[in-house]
Image 1: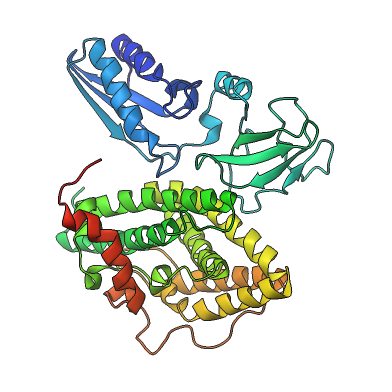
Image 2: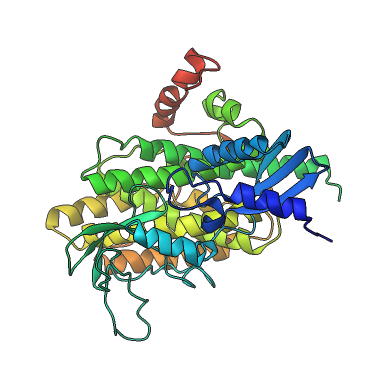
Length: 179
Length: 245
């Protein structure tokens, strides 16, 4: 039986308030990567952290930042455990997180795209509105909101993003890929 | 739950096999840094390499100390497929290697993720990453195969040249239970044949193992270029033990 004490909830909030080292507009809670906090007494705390991608280099910095924040709040011993299952999905990003990504100039991942069987056809390179029902939801330009955008590269500045271009305002932008 | 030492040994062996595949291919892809045909592709190959490196770290940690395993083992102790150690060649060779391996890895991790074995947690993540690697390889195969005469000829030469390393992927790996290897192989073949067909390329014929025994890489027998790759990969750690950034 897993119950969360008020102390653990408070610590979870603290751990979740740490900004993502690569996307500092998001907190770890908004990214959905802090899974649980367990307090053993008042001195020792264990945090479950899940990586976005298996090789995400930000995980180590995230762990250090969580340890630092919790220590600053008087926890003497902090252990950050890396958990893989259940696998993180872009659906774990909160609505607030999506809004912040868009404001930061990154098209947020589409919801629901990551659930169900793994899709291999990752969609056409161009998106638009009002296509056939089997066409995926368009990726909207975070600058002008146009649904008419095209894929430039499947991998961008980090493993979790693709590079796209808006066909309306012609601005290139990063798209947080559905995972 | 208790596990017998024999079961542990088998899981360690399987973790080494899958971990070495990921590590070695990651290193090969990393060799493109500074040499890729366009900037976007440089970034893509590096990102794919990073995914594989992350998988390798998890898998090798299941088998022992990741740094010791990566940097202090001799060539004969590596259990990777011979396919992944093949040199990058031209861009078409790299894409052919990616196509063959990413389809295999995607199918294998999909099966491992649906079970409850020791590899299920990692496979649940890796299958999602491999779907992107596979998509990348398929798109390039289509573009190069159905491109110019030059790109078509090079892509055909690449899929032909690497064909003989593909049989080894479907030799059962000790320590991995519940995978229907012949079924995996026929699904893999159907997918590859479909992609090559759409790319106006011909599915290679001919043997899928060389003069060596099938499954040689899994037993530590590697091709000649692998030794040189390892020398470069291990040089820093061996020359400066314990070096850190």
